[in-house]
Image (tube, rainbow, N blue to C red; front, side):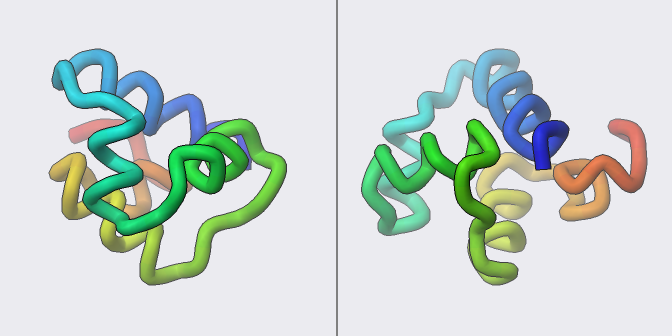
Length: 69
């Protein structure tokens, strides 16, 4: 899920949001989020949905199924 982490990092940077803020919103440890973003572990499906809502993008975009619209 390399593209997953890359896209989240890009959106965070563009929006001025932080990984710590995202981790807090998801109620996970920053280290857990870091593992997801670096592809060491995969997030549960609900976390993917919550990330998409927080970043205001589609899950398809996060998963690399669609380009940004």
